[in-house]
Image (cartoon, one colour):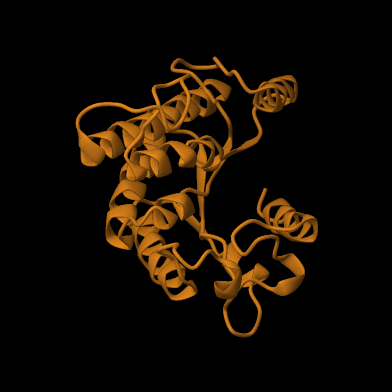
Length: 217
């Protein structure tokens, strides 16, 4: 997980990506929900009545009741996202690809709330990287039958969220990239060839996604 402060990264894979980007000069960089995804267990622990301090063990009992514990977990996720944004800004990239939101929907966030946060994120990127080209990607499609039954997420929810995100990106002056169109089947769900667990991509899915991004660099 990334810590607060530009360029301060704990994850070895993230450090390697940043180092390669810095060696290659100002290029493209992606802002994706990796840090938030790794905090998802914290949010789940909060929902069950336990939460985790940053750097602590998920599920450790804390006072204040499940509601306050879930709020704490959400603040941890927010801190991770803030740190990741600092890392992106530190690279001074020419192009930023933004793909954020599927974990929020999995946690039960309303598409409207996600869209509002998305607009704020794009505005902050524009403020801190005024020369950068900002490309907002659509949320990736999912396969309904492979997503956990208890998850508050369906293909219809993802499509509705994407419509709101596209509207917000356009209004903010960012480019919109409909990645979902290149990964979905005729029904609008994630193509079986690209499906890992219904939400995450398979190796073939990542290759297809990378090809879409390369075409827009």
